Image (cartoon, rainbow, N blue to C red; front, side, top):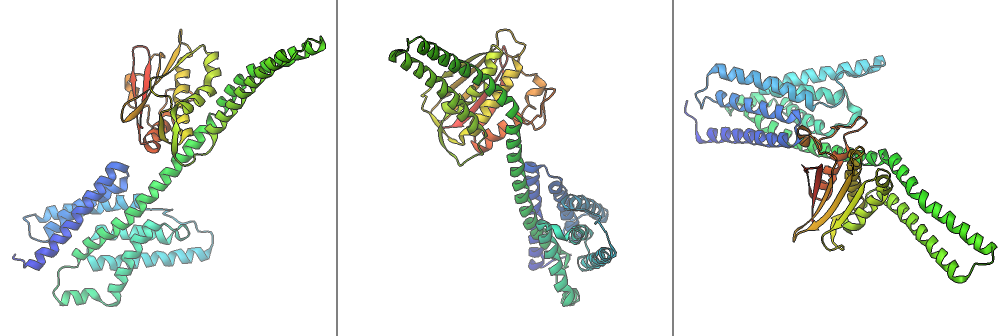
Length: 437
């Protein structure tokens, strides 16, 4: 069969649009791993084979064309079910709702039937019908991505129905209308899935923020215990200072030099208590806007919170600053404290039954980045777990949640645009953080 240039051009445009949606959805699938992306990608691949066979421009057998149609239909069903939002069967509590939902279902069936009669391509009709049902059965929920898709098709189909467009189209001898369906379907889906992708990102960010907040709350009991240990010694010291002052006063031996000495000692204890409270408060304060801050201050506040626990477990903490102590990075200070605290806390847990336990915190820098290393002698991480420890809900602890290191990686990579890695050493493990200066 010989085609004129316009026909070849129209087919070429249709092939191009479908091919673009295949590439677009496949890339989206690689990044998101959402089933509806890969199922739609497969449907468009089968559809491309179908339309290529349908055009008679290529030597493709009728059997291959039918296999492509079946493959596209099944993929369309998987896509529509996964893209579907809401309940398949609406909750009906009275006769009024039964009548309304029955009428709406009839509208869906009739509209879907006309959709098939118009375009004569089953896969797109399957998607249209299922997503239309998700709209009419879940009207109160307002699912915008699906509404964009369904309303786009519905308006188009209704317009063509009113003007009896298909009959006019056939009489004029234009190209088969199924080509229009391919182009419109690709455009509508791209708009819908872009909105859906943005919605998923918003949901994901909200979920991650909730996890971050819950992680802080989950540590509150442990932190309060540490604060209690840290407060006990300074409070005891203050009590002894007051006892000594009282004795001197009662024996008429309280001179100005001794009094000033004890006042200074008391102030030192009060400053320590105040700093501990500030560190604890900063750790739990909701994230603020990003700013440049001193790394040393952030690490110090984390060490302060855990220092009592380290002392109780006889852990030798070595904090080495191998660069300028005034070095800064850009981000949210208490989020870095959260990262350091989580890594130090994990090291502390790993060292509970270790002889002569130690933790080394080393800070160094190059021209481009700041590097923080947190090393321990807790025996290291099993090889099979090294690649899994940053995955959500993966844990080797009996009472662990599996979100601590996941959140650490999340904060480092997303909030600071940095990098985190973990390696085993001869005696234990070492977490290495990379941040831009």
